[in-house]
Length: 465
Image: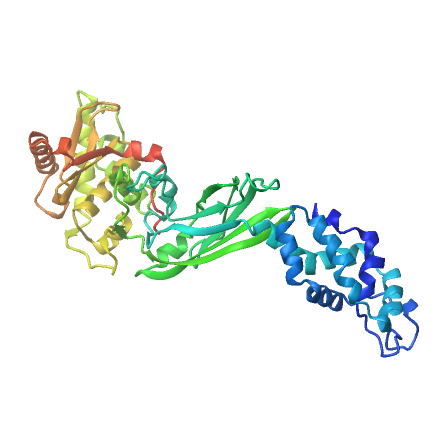
């Protein structure tokens, strides 16, 4: 629209009167001493400088007061520039304009000067602020925040996108201005050192607000490389989109700390199914899984690993499932993993090593044992359950496919050389029964969730080499 208000035909006459080409004192243009007719170049910088000097307070007042920029255009060219003629350069400038590329000149003038006025006109009713910025981003969940905080609301019941969101306000008053209309807004944002630029757009109506929240894709290699918390910045830029132009009207930088992928940190309260997200530590695709499955198969009839199928030596599928579980226990017990508390990592939250890290270090705590066993069971194809009781965790599995009958295994017994699968089974079943009798699954002190449900929600394993 604004380009139409800047007619190309007017440039040769109206603009020419106030511009300074590269001339001598006598009006001769160019270093070669030839007359101005040979000059095909217009000094756009000089042209722009003169225009800027003539944009006075009166012009800005009229710009804000008038609903149409045409009025400003007329004031600018009919009044202001009438006093700015420079006779010494007029003829040379007119000659250069006659030979100039009007399309090129028009674009240069528009981008250099008129865009300044246009940008302020577009954005003068817009403002923005950071609505929320998460101070701690935990690498274990960083790429799952769109799922973890989907439809999340704060204590006031207001939507609260995570890890960052920006509010945009359009203050144009429809009752006093005929030119009020919606505006399209674009937010660009990135976490320095960890993401590419995320882009999100939306429309904001007059007398209304818009919330914009970027969805980042975190660089997995950058997260894996973290061995301690790292302070960084969330960068935010908001633009009004008008006539194929991105007009910046808000920028901000918010501090945050990114934590290593081994930390189960403090997320916001009331996250739905918070425990399910621990499934990121269950990694059935780890590098060593193929070898482990071969070792399990070697202990089974015909050296064949079956899931929810009956071996000829057994009377039922349930009995064959128990046979497979016994082999799983024996193979993992031989790995020589000891129950040892791991060192901290400098972050608020519990450090949890991934199964592949447990196999390398030969040490684990209860949840690390459980995530290792659960990874193997998921790789085999069992329906897996994670049981959390006060200060402890163990694993369950469906005895038969799709069955509500669940067996349990006390995974920490893998650290005891003399323990058997029967011992681990009996211990876990007893623990589960005690929690049921105490009503802890009803009052929330204990919980159990299906790994399959977590996967359907989109909680995928973290890729740890």
